[in-house]
Length: 124
Image (cartoon, rainbow, N blue to C red; front, side, top):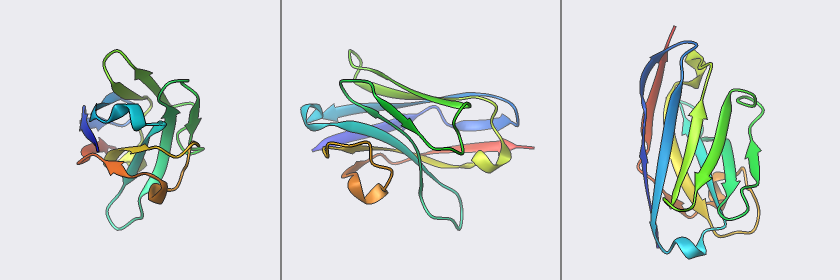
């Protein structure tokens, strides 16, 4: 079992930045990739970005490409999401998720371990 804990959410004005972190513990050797998803009120959970745990290969959603960057720190067992040029439509609960499947999936059903989520609110 993999445990994930997110941190770094908060309230920021449009155009500002936030950095989210996801700390992984437990059976981290089973992780192939970690992903970030977000869910706004009344909307489905959507893919944001993912990174392979060892190789560092990344995949980023079109809606955030050029503004969000995903990175990992294997020494600290963490994955970070640097979010710049934030927009009100980025407001959502952001979740970290882990998968042992050998691909950078964009579908939430492919991820088996989830954090509790962290709220990001961008004011206009």
